[in-house]
Length: 109
Image 1 (cartoon, one colour):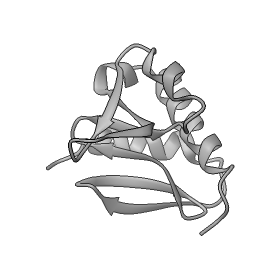
Image 2 (image 1 turned 60 degrees about the vertical axis):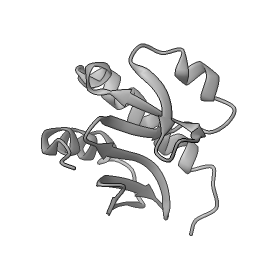
Image 3 (image 1 turned 90 degrees about the horizontal axis):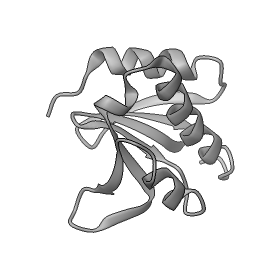
Image 4 (image 1 turned 45 degrees about the horizontal axis):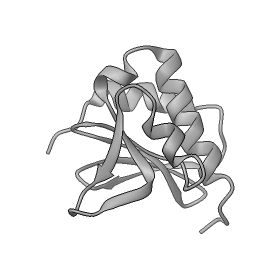
């Protein structure tokens, strides 16, 4: 599985102002961690975003966002944003911020 290096660079830029961001290769992509908690991951299909259970339904209602399902079981609290939904810098920044904002509510690992 290959992921889009250009998208990785754009996510890096979007999260550059936050402290505690680290990167790890996971799920065939590149995950962005905030204090040890994954907030998003660039995959071959787009951007996995950890929105949390309370924002899950609203996130699914957004254009180009769908259920994150890696094992045949939907991952509640996570959405997959297709590449088309990340075309503008504003939309990418919104998704990356939503993932980072949720990860910031979790205890550091």
